[in-house]
Amino acid sequence: MPQPVIKPTVYLETTVISYLAAWPSRDIVRQAHQQITREWWENRRSSFDLLASELVVREASAGDASAAQERLRLLAGVRLLAVTNPAVELAEHIVRRGAIPTNAAVDALHVAVAAANGVDYLLTWNCRHLANAAMRHMIDVACADRGFRPPVICTPESLSDEADDEGRNRG
Image (cartoon, rainbow, N blue to C red; front, side, top):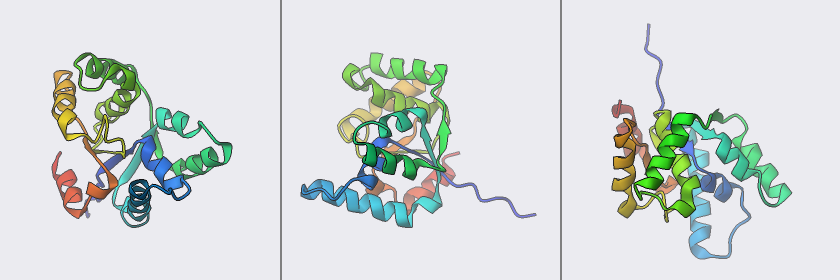
């Protein structure tokens, strides 16, 4: 009997859903991120097992009611991970270690939920605290301190076919 194909897992952080649902921006960089996100969603998402968390739903629900409705529509059918005590404790550790600043503790919680659930990738446009090469090592060390394998934190632009192969081989 053939083995089922196991897709790499991707935690969708709120910025990805927000860029996907947003009206086109006048800012050229933001506009490019929106386009890349839409292309990833249309062409690449089926290659992954998509995940989010209660935290993403809460953040996506905020703001303009019609925009929130669109963000929640996009999250419909995405499997939600619980914000568990181990994830909260890991997030606190990430902040204590200085891997993510205190004022961005919610970002640490996104990382922690993904790590506590063994997620392969955390997809984000938050390059200040998450998809940030200068902070990456500290996030990885903080997760490893507590016995968790950190997710690969990346933007939709960097999650290519080669990354899919890497995710399948990370086991």
